[in-house]
Length: 357
Ligand SMILES: NC(=O)c1ccc[n+]([C@@H]2O[C@H](COP(=O)([O-])OP(=O)(O)OC[C@H]3O[C@@H](n4cnc5c(N)ncnc54)[C@H](O)[C@@H]3O)[C@@H](O)[C@H]2O)c1
Image 1 (cartoon, rainbow, N blue to C red):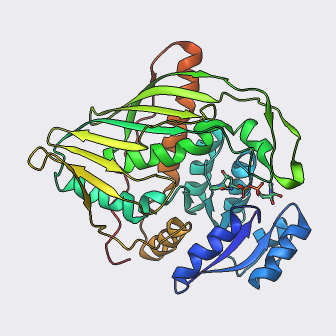
Image 2 (cartoon, rainbow, N blue to C red):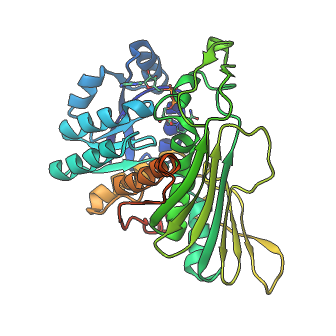
């Protein structure tokens, strides 16, 4: 049983409490903290936790793993403080907003013999694991091509604090790219090169949530990313992430191989239909899930806790999150320079999750 201290008790925090409650023999959230102390206190009351200051939580003897649910710009600082405090670090995505900070986190964890793992953990859900099983069992032959489309008009109509989505560390790639690129690495292995173009489409944005309704949302980041990723296997993915699109008819993720095609569910969910097309049937067939379909946010943290006990690397590893960050940042660098960007060479495809989790 690993004890968890949560830093950042905002919008996504309740989803973690629900997801972790499914695995109460593995992990237990014992304390929480937030820059906004009243928010932490209210959260602690709702979930019967101890509310602490950030520094007190980091120093707390009961806490084994710090669950960092702060906004992206704070992820690196909180992760480095966590490691310095002698605790394991699990963060919401992205790992950091700069590649150098991502590397610093991995190096600090290695030096301190602490573990780092990072969302997204959706690839550990029934959808991602069933698709992985099909690819490994040869159902589509050798994967040649993939498509990944995350097209939306942005989160400002509904999010209570939409501003960070359009500041450094935000935008559709750093915000949503982790789901799509992590899902692709789970299915296709490590990435090798990125070639991309980016744009800032819609710049007049207005918040819609009650507390901030009518406030202008300044846009300081690119809001449309279009590019290609070449994997070490030779497979090529076509990827678009955008906050500039009202409506579309494109599938979220498809993988196409020498023997068939695979339709993969929304990588921002844990379950969803996995469909297989093979020439012999000449139709899309829904495939029964290989794994339980009720897991939610936090399964990556549960897996990390188990892997620490077993002396293994977590599946949602810091190295995987760094590789994904490297690729996401390469979209922008590629666009700015008009060049194809070669990524740091890494072998980070996580092993499949056992079926009896
Ligand atoms: N909202 C979602 O639907 C959603 C879904 C999946 C992942 N995420 C990710 O979860 C993270 C948090 O998003 P959110 O929507 O909950 O944001 P939020 O703004 O609602 O909550 C973030 C909380 O972190 C606190 N905080 C910020 N910096 C801090 C610091 N340095 N130390 C301590 N507390 C700090 C804020 O006061 C706030 O309460 C982001 O990385 C986001 O990408 C959000």
